[in-house]
Structure formats: structure tokens, C-alpha cells
Length: 325
Image 1 (cartoon, rainbow, N blue to C red):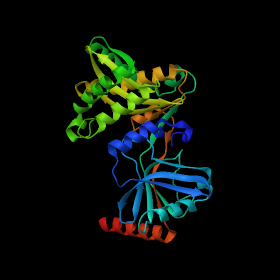
Image 2 (cartoon, rainbow, N blue to C red):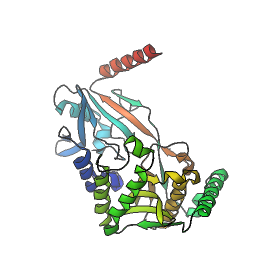
Image 3 (tube, rainbow, N blue to C red):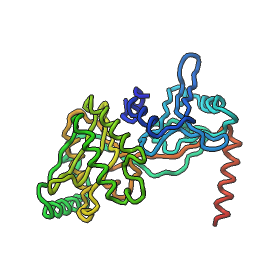
Image 4 (tube, rainbow, N blue to C red):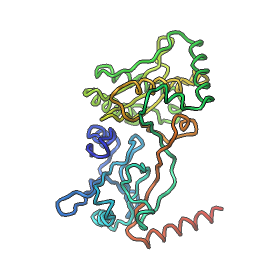
């Protein structure tokens, strides 16, 4: 998978292997469709109901784990063929958050056997020009808000500074610091923070340690009062930086340390010569959208074995929604 979609870091063999070993299960299958001797599409899929399958895509994965060739976009029958080779009578294959730039399943505009469902957008920044040019393009109110928070947090503590952690021998400690910040926040209360219990701590340590061996691991840290007050985990490959996780000290929330960290991360990435784009691994909020001019469309897509099946389930869904009303 790691040579597709511009060599995106989220399809790197290290990243995919760690997703499988940490969050996978023995029901996940590798589905491969071939036309003669050419692989048309390939996906990691898992059952999600009777006859229903979805592309394996845990919450920690920025992209769904499916790749398609040019033949797939030209001949969407390959998706129906893929359903036929799955165990039992398989009638639906779904992708829960499909990036519009990498349409692994055809949308309903391409094939009537598909349906596209709304989903929150994601965001990315293409590196063009200097950071100063980029920052001037943000709204004046937004820039003033970030500067006001910077002054507030600088006055509240000593030694405010930003740094990158990249060295392999320092990565695990940096991930531990990030996990501590998350566990102190609302994520710790809901059980979604990085921890050993949910497998996320070992996952991020393994992924970033592996990427660090080739200079592709980045942990941005905002320091103050001799400690880490905000942290950003990221990976880089072929000029693409993916911002995976952000955390900050909840006791400093009034100063917006996460937003100030974001400012420093972007500033430093703009200054690096080998970075082409920056991607945010998040469902964008209204605040997130202030950092960019355009968002990346993300959809949930269902591909049915036949148009009649799609129509039946559309009718059932419509009927259920009317019943609720």
C-alpha cells in the first residue's frame, strides 16, 4: 500500500502493520481483485453485520486501508466482484470516512450502486510561499486572538519555548509526556486518552520509533515552567506531514496552549525545505477551519451489490427517519 497516493505516510507499511497488530482482529481479511495479472484493488476488510463488510479503518488511521488502480475507477464492476469473493452472501462494502482526494469506493455520482453519506470535513495546508505570507492570509481577528493568547500564557509562566523531538532515543519519552497530558484532560475521563489499556500508547511509540529511524517522526513540544504544556505527534514521508494527535495541559485551557502550539508547529514546518503539505488527522471543527482556506471533503460511502439493494435500504432508512419524527 505504501507506494500509492503519493507515498502517503498513513499507508506506510510500518503504520499499517502497527494498526493491524494493535487494533486488528482475526476476522480481518485481505481482499484482492485482479484483472488478468494486474491487481485492480486491494483492501483490508472486516465484517460488520450479516452480509455487510467495511474497509478496516480504526480511529487512529487517517486513511482507509484500501488502494485502487486506474482500472477500478474506469470499471466499477470490480467492486461487485470484490463483494462476490468475500465469504457468504456479501451485499455491502462500506468505507466510513473516505477522503475525496483518494476515492477508494465510487460515489453515487459515479455508480448508482453507491451512496455517499455526509461526514465532517478534514483539513490540509499546501506549502506555498513563506509562513509570513500564509499567516497574513488568515483573518485579522484570528491572528489577534492567537497573539493575545500568546501574551497571556507568556506572562503566566517562565521559559515559554517550542522544540521538536526527532531523535529515536527520545521519541518514547516524548510520547509518554503526550499521554500524560491527554490523561489529565477530558479524554482521560472518557477513557479515550492514549494509554496502555487501550493499546494506543504502544501503538504511537512503535510507529514514531520506526519513523524516527529515517527522520520521519516529529513530536512538537511547547514548554513552560520547566515542563511540557502542549504536545503534537506527527509523522512525515515524501514531503507529507500528518499531524496525528494534539494534547495540552487542561489547567492552562484559558490561554489556548493548543492553538499556540499549532502556530509554532506550522511555522517550523513552513521553514523546512522538504515539506510539501500538512494534513490534520481530525474531523475539522469551526475553529480548525480558521487555519485553512479550503477543507478536504470526507464522506462515508456504501457500495451495494446491486442498485435494487441500495434502493431498498434507502427506502428503509427514509421510513425509519420519518418514524422517529
